[in-house]
Length: 558
Ligand code: ADP
Image (tube, rainbow, N blue to C red; front, side, top):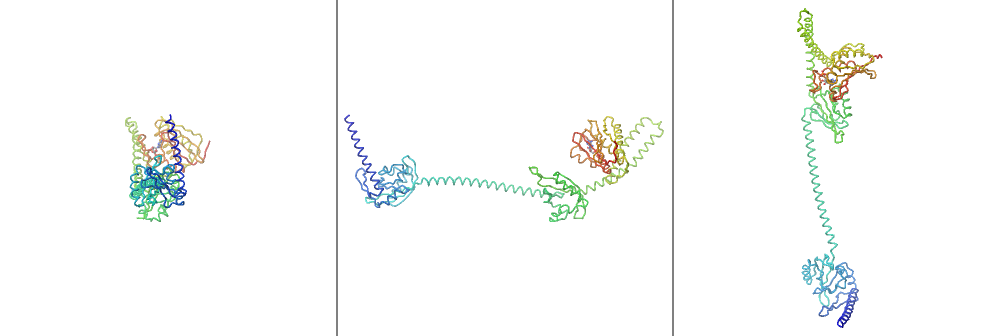
């Protein structure tokens, strides 16, 4: 117990002693820092050594104290003789504790070797290098260490100035990262740019090829072709155009196709052209263009096709003009031939009919029944042939504009009734509903109008094999009477409707092909036209058809 009490007292007195020494040391440091002391004595364990700051003056110390760099003075043994507060901050240690410590202890292990060789050199000459300090929390601080020898009264010491490079290094690091990011972004941009350039090159090439392709194609077809903007302005003609018309680019621009049109074709072409552009659908027109080579007008079939973009808007029109002069001539020759042939056939046919009649009436009672049957069959065949030849003759006459006949007052209602009776007789299986009530009087040729009506009724029967009802209806349309023949048969498509009134046109559907030659409707249209009337059809494929004609009415009796 006695022993413990002594030790405790001893410890107390030692503590007191040490506290005194610490206070003394703090006072000394404070005195040095504030310039009150120019020298200090350091106990290095064996002896006391006196250090005097050679340039010790207050200004110098205040400056050192305030500066942003760490400042340390070490002796040959590496002991810290002096340090400023900035250094103490850097290593996170109370200032008074740094004095007397070995400076090496603050150097990061990775920098020790470099530090030692730097210090070796520093005693010879001023030098500097980057090293890493390690603070009390073992954090590394990158620093620039500048070493300068200091001539102190008691010998040479080393002044170490430590510039904290943390911010600089961090900034450098950030900069490096930013540079890397920039380089990466640059590379990405360059790559994108290259890709874009490649795409543009490819597209340009494709465009060039497609343009060349188009031009090549356009210049190597026999037709004249051009393109129009949606407003009709023509912006391209192919080579054939220039060769055929002999027009230059400027003249073409100024007049277009109007400059070489046959005078008679200007108005119909212009009308068709303007309505075609407005409707925005494919349209065709036949007209004559003047050929420069021989100053001749040649027939052309013009076709205009709209080209639409993804939104369905017309981007431009493609026009073609195909020379059909030779075909037209061929057609004329054919028509001429048909005209002459049917005319020539008519005479022997009439003789044949006459002879058959003679045979029938000659010694009638002596003719065996089988022969009478043959004569009847021959008569029927001859009648069909006669109808066919008459149709062919009619076609030639209409084509030549020579279909002429007398016009008289005709009771259309009676005419219809007689046709319906006739039809009922020929087609007993069919039902003909005549919904007529009024008496319509018109001016016309009864025989020809009967021909038209019978043709419509024959067709209605021919093209509706399943539903055998045919309705014949009359109605008033302003000052016209309309006669409709309605069936519930195969009907017609839009495309077919446009063509059925053309010469020799027949629907190319093998399922419904009958013996006709496509003349009936052409002749009917010709006859109705002669009567200053109108012929047409309303129909839907598969749902039957309603063929009608309208004639100017002279009187209606109820
Ligand atoms: P065809 O002698 O061939 O009947 P037409 O000139 O009378 O000649 O008719 C022309 C074409 O119109 C026919 O081949 C047929 O395809 C079509 N057609 C005429 N009438 C009708 C109808 N009522 N229903 C359906 N198609 C019809």
